[in-house]
Length: 316
Figure 1: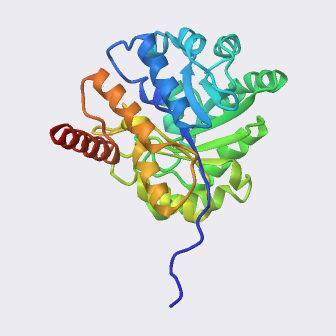
Figure 2: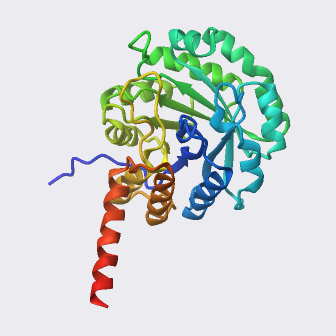
């Protein structure tokens, strides 16, 4: 009988965004030592790329005010890319001083979101980053573009694949090495994901496109599988499901890394990342935050390990 399962990638790259995108919305200040420990644990787990810092105004994102100190104290591993998000030249100067390996700039596929979020049009936002992009390339660093609201906007609703492709072309013109197609408010569905990626890859190399899915409506893993069927091999995730979106009530934030790794493991897709080490990292940061991790796979594995440890203790 002929298999109905399509050909999937044999390996993928997982970009861990918990230390930046995940923690930035936390209201209580997280000590530098905890952030450093989290990043070091994630490095030990085998990630090739960790989004570690954001050099934005502390007035707007207080949690990222310690990014310079964090970048100075982490234990770096050769070959691992430590990324930093920057909004302007001042942010880039800080990222360079912090020895970031990759600079992340951002735009939106929705005009309404761009106006509400950064008070300018999409075209104006791209022009604001042109000087930053030129400087990044002059310093020989990687440049990544993050495209928000690629599957839906809290203000205008539907976002068309053509609108996404248009902004991808603008980011490409800045010299972006990689572009993240982000479901910022988690409203995307599997077929929609495929339609957007199929449109975008007409003009931008598939191997340099990444899927960034939030799990607000519980569709993130399904959307990742849909993107795998298209051939996408780069995905963003956040340890313990850290994060959230202030624009969508009830948003659970980024898809949990543990859940993504469990999916990939079941599909036989290589990631180069140790799931148990990530589970431990997720439990570590969740314990510090005083709440249960969002990751279902992470919590299930942690509970299984605890039960096994208790049984062994009783036995001895």
